[in-house]
Image (cartoon, rainbow, N blue to C red; front, side, top):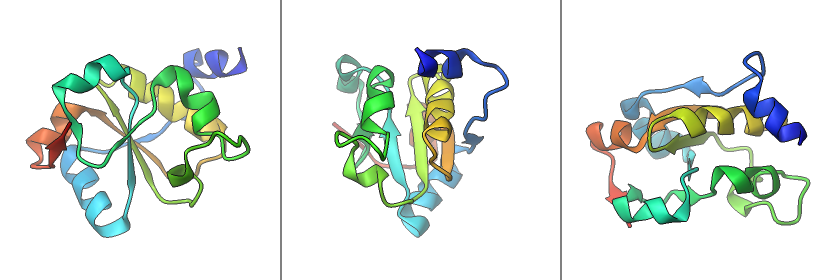
Length: 123
C-alpha cells in the first residue's frame, strides 16, 4: 500500500531522465544495470539485450535490497536504468527504487529510445 502511494505521489523523488544515447554509454562505461519493468507478455516485442525483467508489480519485493528475493544485480550500487513501453511505468518504478534507497536511478522511458540510439535488442 505504501509503494502505491509513492508511485502516485507527484512530489515523490523520482529517477533522473536520460536519453537512449546516454543509457547506452552508461551500460558500456559504468556497467549500469538495465531493468525492463514491462509485463512478461510484452517481452515478445524484444528487450534491451542483457536487461533484467522486473515487472512494476514485483518491484517492491525484487528491488528491495533488504528483501531476500531482491535481484542480486540490484544489490551492488551500480547505476540502474529503467524502461517500459511508453515511459509511464518506468517513471513510477523510479519513485519506487528511490524510496527503497537506490541512489543512482535513471529513467530512459521507452524501449524505442534504446533502439533509436543503436543499443542492442534481444529476446
